[in-house]
Length: 507
Image (cartoon, rainbow, N blue to C red; front, side, top):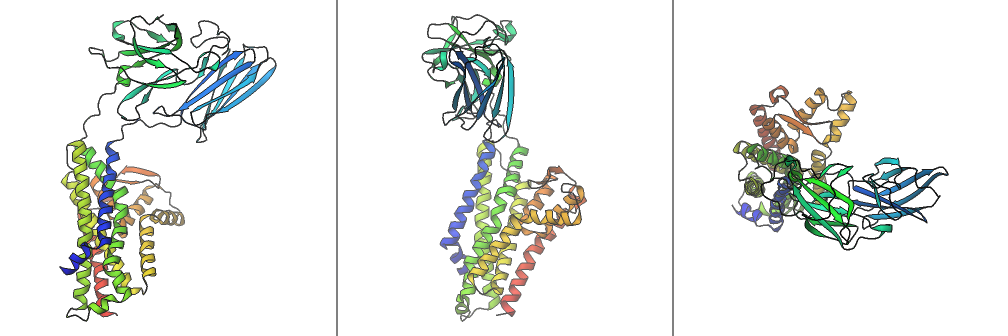
């Protein structure tokens, strides 16, 4: 009891307990992944011409409408005099512009080469982009901006403060490349099923003068985000929101689009099911939480036993009427109890977080085996660390070797398996390799939680190798309740027995 109290109240152990409980909050992002993933930036490229030449402006933003810098846009303009190029790179405001000197031609072909900061790019092109406006209905006047390429002047983006909501982004250029000022943005809800289609294609648009439309806001910059208007009642499922930008004098522009109501106003996500809650917990335990258990056990056992052993403090304790075996068991159990309390508290926090977000607790047939797997890992690494304490003579070598075991068992294990597969000429991701992978979980105490999860989910996965979530029959790979239990007992008993032998039979 003295050793248990001493260990639990140690500042180092209290810090470890706090750290591992804090780590449990890392499961929260699993329940907050509502924003759509996106590869690369959204890019709009506008162009206009005047007496001095051809000018283009590029704008880039992410899924939240925030500016993206480093997007390179090259415009190649080909007319009878040859091909002329200009390039721009978006700055910290997500904007870039460049010009090509006038050649006397406005009806020619063009090509756009857009390169994302990540290195990938795409190409667009067409004919006569300076002659016709976006809807192709009339020639563009000098100075009139034309959208060459992009998502459109009006689009939707994810709300930056609430990823379950959508906002409306307007990106437009005034005459001669000026920033818009006092432009009015209006909207109107329309039931598509009523037959009143406002926007049937890129080349058919109802003439609007703003009458009957409601104001969304005023556009005073190249790119501006507006909150979606309040949803009107009694709309059909496939209804739309028509949005258009008007000049300060009320004249409509080519900046218009329709946004589907189901997309702009996504329904709330369905409630988390029991299977989802279990899946989130299993993934968190194996891929995040489990990584820290060996480290916690190594640090805790060093603090409670290892440093006293290598510094000679234990010898002064042994002058008291206490046996070597009793002292060794006492320190082992006190370390295990302190770390077990920390792990169980953290698992309890995970369960409470799961209940907070889903109204469900993690199923007992998931959380209890997972807790048991962590107890095995704790006991195994505490025993291993205490064995090393009997074999090594300095704190530096003890800590270094302990951290080395942690790195090998937790992080380099996959590399060792890949090397083994290479030497055996086995393809990574093949059935023979999966057998090796599963078999390695029996001989690596840091992977015991993965072994248990493989049994629970009937699947084996690896973010390192060429398989993920591969469904298997656990018994075909030797994974049964009895094999798991036997492995757990051996990982507890063997290091403990070795430690007790060394502590009582060797000085």
